Length: 480
Image (cartoon, rainbow, N blue to C red; front, side, top):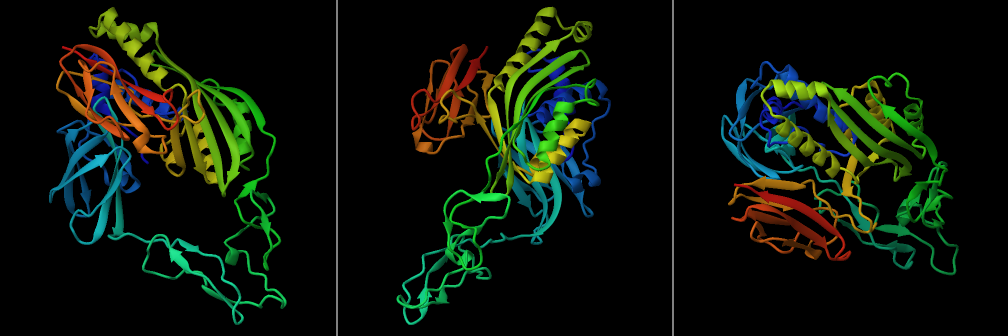
């Protein structure tokens, strides 16, 4: 994806003391860097463009629009615009026109849009996140024929007994495609019991042939075409993990980071390795520090498994930025409050875990780009990633990207959790129903309504399938 920018939101963050100055929204150094970019844009802001350049639209770009704001773009000779009609806690309502197309985007949902109803998708659009009420939306120009490409996924029964020199089986497409291009054989020749037996190929037995660098996680079965036919997964043989030690990542150390080089070298062969990486940067008087444990776990099903967890995070205002804010009219009390809010946001990311499945070369590219200071969010988009909150109980994985909300009485919004196996096992309660209530006591999401009581309370989601101790706590504040 292209570079992110949110000029309006960055300006408001500095002008309104009750809003967060800085948000740690991800669990990686890359996300920290993206957040810092917002601060850069604040100091260098002079003009805000309401048009998406065609080159950026072709590559894919991120736009940040407040409610009731719009941005224009062109597809071919036609001019269009995107307007944000409503911003929820985890969704946005959007209208795209010239010919009005109204749609709702849930968090992380991607949709493809046919702007002129000609049977060809013209753009794809995705809600990447919502920061301080401002949606971050990815948009890219595409040219794809409308229609879902169905990928056959065949599942076959075992072979029948050998009758008249033939065996049969039934194969079913789990995806219900209308095509049969990749359908396995449902009939094969055989030799009846008592005669010389016929050994089937590995694929005919639904096995997997493990190459020389992999071992079978299940049992080796006899096959006519291989001596390494596995009835389970082919996995990398257990290897001793390389400890790359600790690394401090800063402007001063970028040219000399041998421990980070050790981690990059391990990624080139997806060899198990670990690194404790501390990112620190004094940026216009705002000292940002984040420590992340990072690990390469080796291959699994042909993918290189990468893991990281944030161990600590903090933001400190130096005398330089404090003086800037005092000169702009802020009081010391307001500055202290902003710094406290920034640190609370940083603390909320501690214990967030990320596990990603990369193609080996993509992981190496990401790490090299990071070292060179050329990080892009698109480096992560090529991987399959899952974020969870680390709990004391390793079986407890419930979490939410939402941590807290505040507003006036009457405000209503939705909150959802992930990391569970059964949505029916999730229960919701409010610790103080005078401050906030929930409209649903079970399920993966609920709608919270702020009541007349002023103050703070917690909304608690519990995964009862794991136990009453497996909880995620969402803070709510109602003010006058």
